[in-house]
Amino acid sequence: MYCCFLINSNIKQNLFKTENFGFSMDKLRILAAGDLHGSADLAERLAKLAKKEKVDLVVLAGDIAGFGGESEEVLKPFKRKRQKICFVPGNWDAFEDLEIFKNDAKSIHHYYVSYKGVGILGVGNPDWKLSLDDSDFELIEKNFKRMKPRKRILVSHLHPKGTRAEFSGFEGDEILRKITEKFQPDILISGHIHEAEGIEDKIGKTRVIQVGRKGKIIEV
Image 1: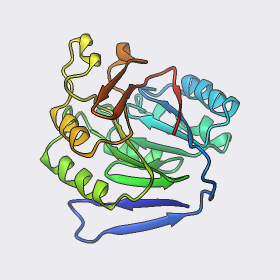
Image 2: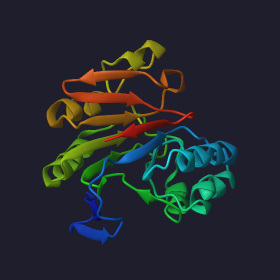
Image 3: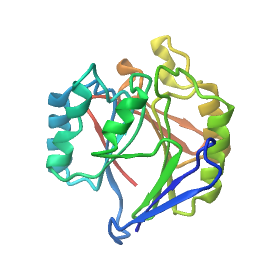
């Protein structure tokens, strides 16, 4: 069972949507990537990798968009291979891009989805927003309290403060750090810092994984 939940501070009611993505309780196999920046060629390579590795789900950690019409094509390779995609927006992703992406993928910005007993919750930073704020914390907190799955993954474009990714000279996000420390998801997937791709860290029991353009296979 695949469930999707939205909590939006601008909408007074909660919206609930359930879709049947299968009932297997085997491990969830994910291809996580980020920072495609409008490259359909890169998306094609990742889609081929997802097919080869027989993943259940592709998770994109923001900065999907390029310039102009590139945004309309970047997710098509995944769709042609009938791969399920969920994503959070990054600072390069404008609000109009999000509407385009929703034709081919599911936004988990302030949503969570459940698949194979794993809850996947997202928080993005679209339209050149470069940090999370208290409203993001409140929405994520509400979603974490609703989540019942056995395992939990948090997906963010930004990286948390105080991790090894800061070798790049870019300080991580303080709100994301607080969220991770408080709710201790099993895995935190982040992007944004290209040169930090592949770096892993720990915040408490949370495995922090920096992903990027090469993609990473994760099993939960």
